[in-house]
Image (cartoon, rainbow, N blue to C red):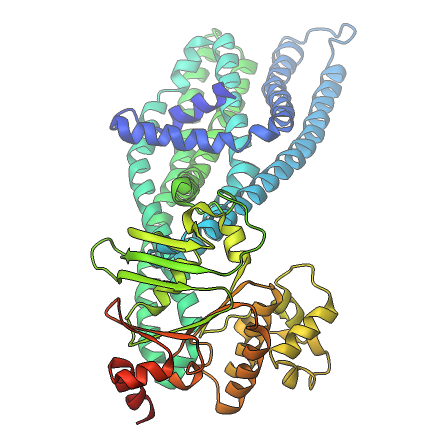
Length: 600
């Protein structure tokens, strides 16, 4: 395998380039080969078949040379197996063996390739799931989608066809050159006069090909991201009649991508015709020189014929390598992009590190917490409060005051810069994230439902009995509309729950939160998008499940949190007031002014 890698490196690395670029390219190739290690036995078997096939390919022209020189020109008499009939049977037998081995080799290497791609795609998806929110906030969805789809697919052909073809072509070239030198050194040197010129052209094109591939991948990512965003926001586009503007924006990106593909076609169209042209030139030169030698009887006709076959066999893999060259460059670029993502190990969330807590009692305390998303502008400033088990705390304030940030911190999505966050007296950083999140359920303002059915969306693939699911739906008051569906809890859910109203989705999200049997329930603007009737249903559900559970509520509708044990009022990331609804009204401060504005 090391020999193969060295040969490939020589083919795709130019002689003159910076050490850093060369080291990176070698590192990329090593990563590609590292994926094949678990399958090395099958790959070695396929390579053995390729070697036998190559030997057959090299022997066949020599058989024809023997027939022409010994039996047609010299008219030597047959002697046992040394006959035209035996040579014909040998030629046919070798062809049959080659065909059978090709069949098995193709099947083996394709199965290996598919397994590698399957595992790689799984690794990419697992990595994306473990990326922290601060990374996802700064990275477009199109870029991540491209890594998991287009870039992984680029490697499919590489493992299924290109690598085995490279091995076959390299060893076939070595075998052909060896056979040619053994037969006639002078003719071999004449045949290879054109090779330096062809090598120069390939090296010149290589840099341009790779740079263009980087641009192509960039535009594919932009197109994927643009499409995902446009489809998600299609309702807004149609409401505000923005179809023409979005169409224009898409056409600009699409045109940029088309320019890079046209340039790629231009480069590709040069490689294969150039290989065929050089093959024809080498054959013509060989025939011209060889015929003069045959005329003065210093060269046998069979040797010249064998050389013309070898030249064709030599340039066929050269032409094949030229054709595969673009696939190799594309795969190398995709490999860099995939492993740039997979190598983000130090920032990935590890939900299984820390102190195990099967059950959280529900006491939450913020001690002088300072937090910033960008390490420059403080979103929370010296925030302190303590929620006892079973209490209901509400957080109010204008947009940007820091309410949702508090929820993100309690779930461990971000790390604070100063202070402490304690859960049951334990620093949140010391608790396993999976145990922390298992005990905290969140109902967001924008309810997200997955494609599937109602049961799956409430259970989230956990092993929960259907009877229990029905109980959770009853508690959340979602049964009020689900009972009207013919299929009940197995009613299909379309993408993002588009076949349900905002209020229905919110009730289902509430049932999902209850189904996790949490110690802490967080309602983040959970009643913002629903009508008064549905709000009453949610309030009834809240009353059913908040008993003996800690509840945190963020709400713009102040009427929904007036019964909270304590209301914390935030402004510009600081706590400006705290107390019960009546206490805050009596104080006549910021909360009272918000309350007046809320009802005005």
